[in-house]
Image 1 (cartoon, one colour):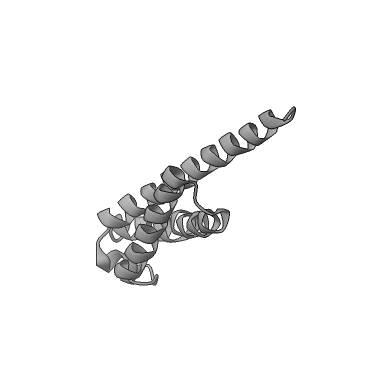
Image 2 (image 1 turned 45 degrees about the vertical axis):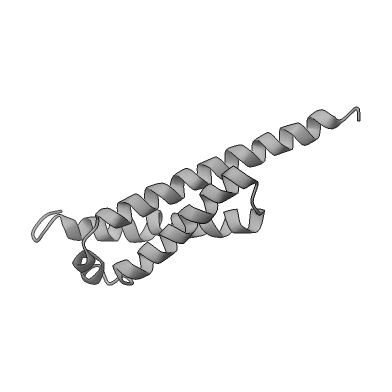
Length: 103
């Protein structure tokens, strides 16, 4: 057991990464909740219900992963969903919230 610190370090790194993914997923969910359904249509993205379901699932599973030491695969899926929403959908939907004639 002379290398037990390595396992402890790996566990802490996993926990920190899971917390970051959970934070991103919750941020994506809250942002999605604040948007109007018509903004998604104007931006030619999937429906608000679709993105709500994905971001809610990502948030739930990632928070449960932090609390219970979930699977790395689940965390990767949740990070992908939150990342796609925050990097692609959110900027497109945000442009639609500014109204006509705005840059």
